[in-house]
Image (cartoon, rainbow, N blue to C red; front, side, top):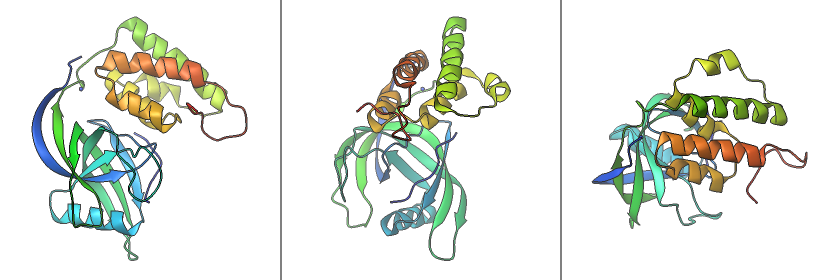
Length: 220
């Protein structure tokens, strides 16, 4: 499977458009509208997926699988992204930047003849990008983020963090925080920026410890 380091809408979603989406199931990787996700694609079926997407509309659906194996069940909610920057390598691998567009809910998985999986999904009509946290909410997430980063030994440019708007701050933390797949999915499905910010604070408080045996704090 391909993957990459994770980096870099209060309205409730209204189901709007149904469309066919080719999906990239990747545990621990989530994407939000307006955010970016760098990916290194090396597994043959996902190289097929990217090649097909580039030949058509450059669209790819990021979604988490519920388990291991070749074709595990998928979570209901994912995010549709558009391939922005792309580096095609001579051996068939790709480095891409996926730009988040809209979250979606899976209606059903399709019986596709392609090597990669496809779903029928409902796109969410949403716009959180203009939402703002209260002063108390912003302070809470920044304070807890500092505590969490210190506990995990992360080096963070806090000056740059302080310049982020609320939407970018909340969703960047949601994408890069080293929580397990269940916590990541809860963040993706949280409806409203304030709700997601509150959940992030709770997760950082609960998992802001490291026993030295694993690289990732988990819900397990």
